[in-house]
Length: 248
Image 1 (cartoon, one colour):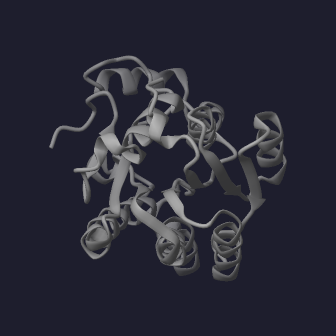
Image 2 (spheres, rainbow, N blue to C red; image 1 turned 120 degrees about the vertical axis):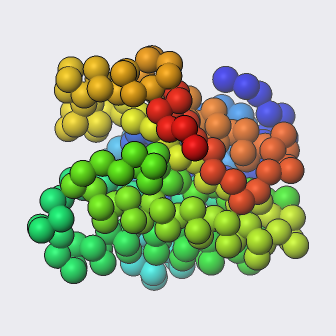
Image 3 (cartoon, rainbow, N blue to C red; image 1 turned 30 degrees about the vertical axis):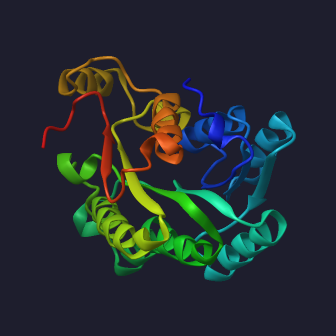
């Protein structure tokens, strides 16, 4: 893991930090000396991670589909810590649903979880962001690969690109950067349990330029870079982490 001395002491907010990529980022930023405040709906996993990390790790159970929950969480952290230096909108759901089975409610619920929550968290954090702060949103390479039975999910992740570019322009005068990470198929525990069969592994390896499967820690490395001063000239960009699956 690269070391970024300037991240020590900075306040980092991470949504969906209890498991998978989120957990890897919580651990990575904590190892850099940052004060890491993370939320999730998985109270057991989140509390266990915060207890394991100890000082500078703070967990809260937050339902990001509820505007009031987001407001309370951000306001409480801003009051306690003052300026926010890094905001990472990682939380998302990725259901596989055939087109004919996607109800209007299912569509609305997924947009609430995957894109409205990102917007509301950015809105609430904005007044508290320090000069030079970094917002990192999460998209997905599915906006390029377009897998079947994921039309609503892909739509939310395409919306993340637009949100990122728009906020980069709006917050740029305050020297606040807004970028997004588009991961490939990451070998998290949930993906391995629910979706990644031996056949899927073969598919992934054949699609990528580099056949090695991607681990969550490798995505966390990119988040560290985008949060650090090393990326201070980069904003409004999409950073694809997929071992060469997508070629634009």
